[in-house]
Amino acid sequence: PSRGLGDVYKRQKQKRVSKKTGKTKKIYMASQWHPLLKKRVYGPSRQNKKDAKQDDAKLTLQIKKEVKEEKVKKQSEEFFGNVADTWLEANKKTYADQTYRTYRGYLDRYIFPVFEDVPISAIEPKHILNFKKSLEDGNNPKKRKYGAETVNKCINVLCDVFNFAVSPLKLIDGKDNPMIGIKRNKVAYVVKQTWSDEQISIFLSSREAKESHYYAMFCCQILLGPRPSETCGLAESDYDPDRQCFYMHRTLNKHGVLEDNMKGSNSFRAVYLPDTLNKIVKKKLLWKKEMRLQYPDLFDNDFLFNTEIGTPVRPDHLYRMFTRTEKRYNANHEESLPVITLYGCRHTFATTNYERGESDKVLSEIMGNTPATFLQKYAHIHGDRKQQSLDAFENIIFKTGNKN
Image (tube, rainbow, N blue to C red; front, side):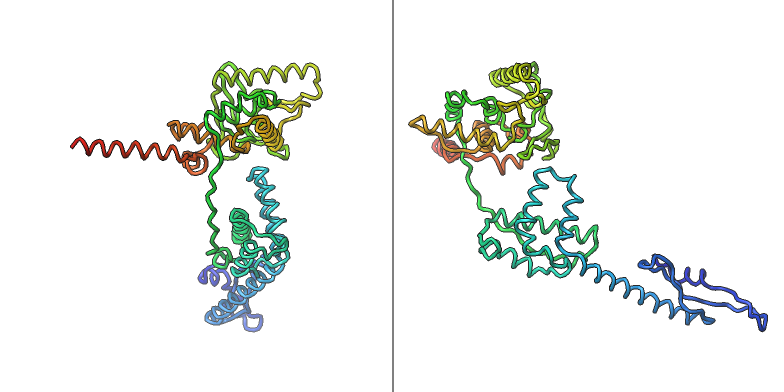
């Protein structure tokens, strides 16, 4: 850092004795710290303090010029691809494994074909807008039109990369960030298909569901509403049959990576198991222990639920097994069930219980969400429930009016 001018001259004012005359003279020199050279640089010796001050001003300007030129040079050497890779690697431990893989995929699939070899400082807002439009209208390397969710995810990734370039890398100034003012697209609301209480009962009581090796996991998904990765990640020690409780604190993703649940503080929770569900899970655990005695090498893991060959159940496998069982049921019955996904069981749990009058706070705690997220994302109120609510309200109003 450069010193104050007064401090500079106190430091650099020197006394020299002339060899010819023997007289002592005061000498002044400009002095500034040079951040590129990592050392202090000096101006010429001056007998006049005013001249040294002028030298100091010139020296300051020269250093600023050299620093700016070096910054521009450095920026020209930093390509977007290098910055993005550095950003992702620096944040690898802060993201869940699945989130990290998702960001990596968006960079490689959508963003790098356009920006990878472009200097980070050369990218302007108009380039971002053109990229966004190319995703929307299909004028991109893959000639596909992408929806709002894909476009918005790309914008989110670009924002993170450019913010990282601003700080801590300091490759561009905050005011030059090309993402300033870039808007995300509106995502159309899609009503999620869910099952009613009666449809849940029909499915879980069916021969097709009960014969599935994954019946206990289906019951957990529908009756407790956890994330599939949480059910798959349950350890034997996370289940307390006496207290009838699951301790949800870790997830297993589709890549087989086990990690602590990083969705938020609500995700670390204890979940009560009703009597019937507790018996179903206990029976499954006993099955695993019996299999471990017969095949100790195959069932040598701490997961509560296993596949038929003893490996942990990954969420994508559980998705396929649920879909297969659902199709089997609909193929064998004249009155088929609405087709829902495994994650739709989570929406079903939220919707049916909320329509029954359960508290959003209680339900969100069971599911590991905040009440706001629960209401916005999971509680899909059906039309008949809305109709009943309005009919009841109308009856109250007009009955009160008729009495008068």
